[in-house]
Image (cartoon, rainbow, N blue to C red):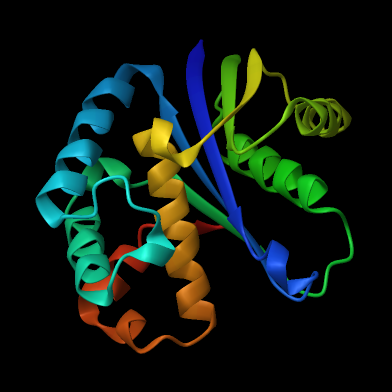
Length: 187
């Protein structure tokens, strides 16, 4: 049985539906601890640490992205769903993106733990309802702050990076950034 851990973060709530992006990080329990250690080491080596993406400069962003691009264990782990001019509530879109990512990864019976950035109790109930509607089986759905998990920080960084790509930020044209972009599977 696959034991999966799913971490999700989003960006674009400030655009009133013009642009919304959800990044999902899915890892199996067997490799979770090893990947966690590698991600933490990258955060410290590059100087990013636990700083949110929107607060770090372009030099640190490129250094972090270059390190991620050199991490083969991220292949098949990063997923992103982009929604434009979609009037549905952001939690519906978040639930949909997570469901698509889970369906792309599962190969049989699975146990799923879902961690969503900043999710409160009322939002948790809403997301659980979305999963049930989409027949996604889960063990637990919880909210957590970015600072508490290297996987949520990864989701935050990738969401920020993909938003920068969509907005045409110049640093995203750098070959280091383009190599990191290739790690993300679009849903």
